[in-house]
Length: 280
Image 1 (cartoon, rainbow, N blue to C red):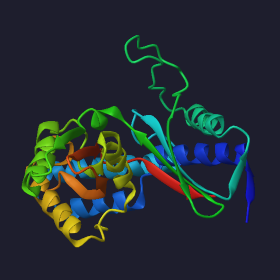
Image 2 (tube, rainbow, N blue to C red):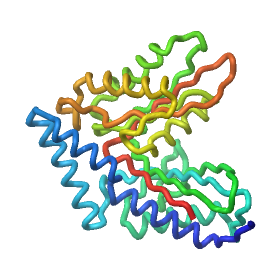
Image 3 (spheres, helix red, strand yellow):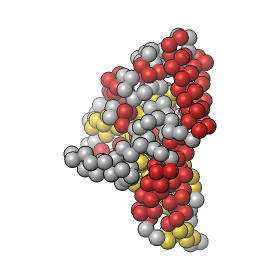
Image 4 (cartoon, helix red, strand yellow):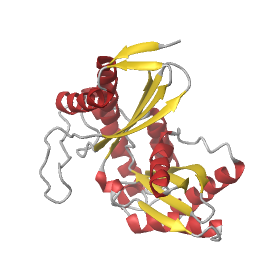
């Protein structure tokens, strides 16, 4: 059945999602941080984890930003093919982002030109990805991605003949090189397959998966667990002070690819991992 929704409904949804993402830590991330603190034996990392948890509590209670870098707005829209949006969808999303950053008193971090570097003062434009699905509903996912962690993300075009161990080493080395810059403990999203741009998109989408929920594909789940173990063995720890937990989780998404290619993208996300999702 065809369903019509107003552009205003999309705007309101996007606005509330970005306010939520920037002020309220995901429950699974909070549980992960608390478990990490419980299992930590060293004083400095325990203190750091305690401070991160306390910060998240204050941010949610007072509706303040979890981090001063409230990120660049990334929006994933999956629209049902029987859904009609009355109005301009792109403008509706942009308006929702602008309202969220204005009403939430979030920092404007977007420049209109990558070289001239003039701030737009609205945190616009957002980055929007669209997809089509059966039905008459729309799933909206948002990511507020800070660049402390974005700047240490990586992509590499492997050869199809490269062993999986090479991919594993690449991911672990990316985190080793990143060190404390992405504000660990992190959540690492991995995209494998597709094209260069598809692998990157997959790596960002991967962080929507709840912590502790591994891939349904057994060989991918095995790789996730192995990477997580090796990353935590690096000993970088919370905010770089050492300890058992450098990463809270690793999530891998895959996609079919060309016979001559094997792209792998590593999306490192900080301890806040600011995402939110709704279906309307």
